[in-house]
Length: 500
Image 1 (cartoon, rainbow, N blue to C red):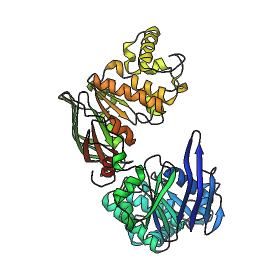
Image 2: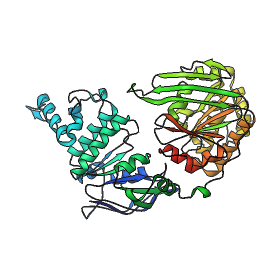
Image 3: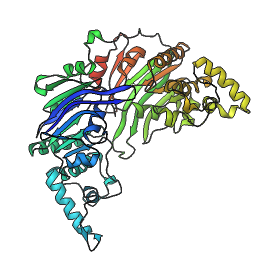
Image 4: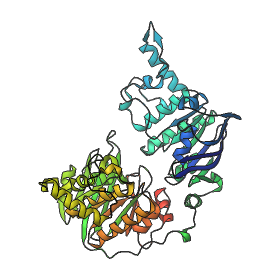
């Protein structure tokens, strides 16, 4: 039904997709897997009409097509259901299903007809699976699982014959996942095709007919699910055998526990009956690097945010620093307790881009400064220690490279000597040289006795840095690895539901 031939997509300085050939037959479910950055998102944005500038071709029913917009893709029968759903929360289920196609009477939307048509739509495209979905309730009142059903029913009602599901179970309970799978299987039996993107290999092998593996922008393998295994798929995703993986660093000899976390729980901000972090316990000792690994949505960022007082949902559990119980309700509490956070989004949350390098380096200590000369003097010394490349500490931080911006985001905390440094994706978007400098800086900090917690999706980085790894899955600790027995194969196997 749908075939991609030689699809290639370039961005400045990087080839995101390189000659990808992929076919999807009518009534087939194809799993699409790969590490973060393998090219999955780029591929579905091309297929969904978001990226229009690419090489190669797409055929639908044997006819070449060139989508210039998402509307073009929908008209050709292709719909993409993204992980972040595109429903309007304050509208009812019926209004979302029929958005732009509302029944009208005397120039006004016919509310009774809208409800009836919405119910008919759900019954036709979701059947008994949608029987308990209240058609006139605002979408915000539904659980994420029901919202997924509404989104898929809307896509199918728009005559979609091929539906792309992007990490659809990342925020679902087991029961909601089962409901979703029932719907997908029912629609498959009716002839609808699906591309199913997931980090959960157990789901892929359970639901799909075939699985396609992307690595570094290339389609490296396609397997019938009956003829493969989680171990083979992990090896294909990585491109190396376990014996060839990066050698881990030797285990450190850490000191006394600095940070202790017991039964940490964080509720989903919109659906508090679910937990994005669920009963996590661990210690971090002086001079130790503990890495948090796991697939997208596993709870890494939510855990660090909770420790720094930025949790968006209810929290529970116990946190101690240097043996003292601490209550962290906001970042000020965390800073007083000796914690510091370098967030994943350095530009949006870690820096003030319109301020100078000097002002950004001084932000955590501004009350201690009484004049600009002191800010400038301290900033020049700190920038030199960090190796920040800038024409002047008075230059706006937005003009720095990604690596130098990250040095500033990290370096602003160093004069206050936090007991625990929390780093979320510390080298994302920086070049190889800047990565090496940041690694050196992190190791220097641990040599001074600081405890470091790193959340990272970069498996070679984890292997290179970690003394211990906590692998998270669905908000829980799926397993722990200790150097020197840390390797990419073991991390990925735990993250997707296998055994280390």
